[in-house]
Amino acid sequence: MPQACLWANGIRRSRILLDRLKVLLTREQIAKRVAELGAQITRDLKGESVVLIGVLKGATIFLADLAREIKLDSTFDFIAVSSYGNSHEQSGEVKLMKDVDQSMAGKNIILVEDILDTGLTLTYLKHQLMGRKPKSLKIAALLDKVSRRTEQIHVDYTGFEIPDEFVVGYGLDYAERFRNLPDICILESDEESS
Ligand code: IMP
Ligand code: MG
Image 1 (cartoon, rainbow, N blue to C red):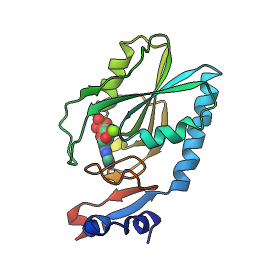
Image 2 (cartoon, helix red, strand yellow; image 1 turned 120 degrees about the vertical axis):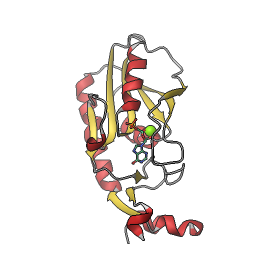
Image 3 (tube, protein in one colour; image 1 turned 90 degrees about the vertical axis):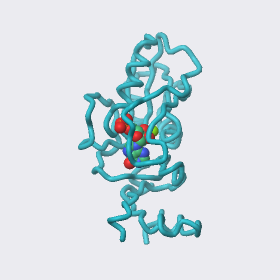
């Protein structure tokens, strides 16, 4: 049984959901790739300082790990948008729920996101943040579901391209759960698992 599922066995009341988890990316694969991204960012920014802006809540774990692989003077900020809610489907509308706390003018910023799906969220946030006149704006997304894209958006640092499957763990949730799974797992739909 994959490690994430072993961990998850501790929660008895959700047996049916847990049977639907299959590991897609192990914690070791994730750590290796995050270290590579951090090294690349460190090289690209050439000693400049950087503000890492995490998109709440999914990007928090990625941001925490990535930040420790970036060998630059760095600060954190967080932004929140409305997204999937408790279902697999997206409304198509993005709304700002929490803005950053500091001015972005003249700063190097990296928008840190867990997953790029249709691209609506990052397109919206990029537009919002570009209006604040940063010195530079780059985007880091751990996962990319390329086949789902409806918006044209350039991502500077991508962790992994993944198939069109619903994933949880390492910050990503299903109805707010599973964010603390150390591996990234596919949550199979009811039909697939029955
Ligand atoms: P986009 O706006 O369609 O690119 O969607 C991005 C947001 O949708 C991400 O920030 C996630 O919150 C959510 N999302 C997309 N795919 C998944 C998934 O497979 N698991 C969990 N959340 C997802
Ligand atoms: Mg998100």
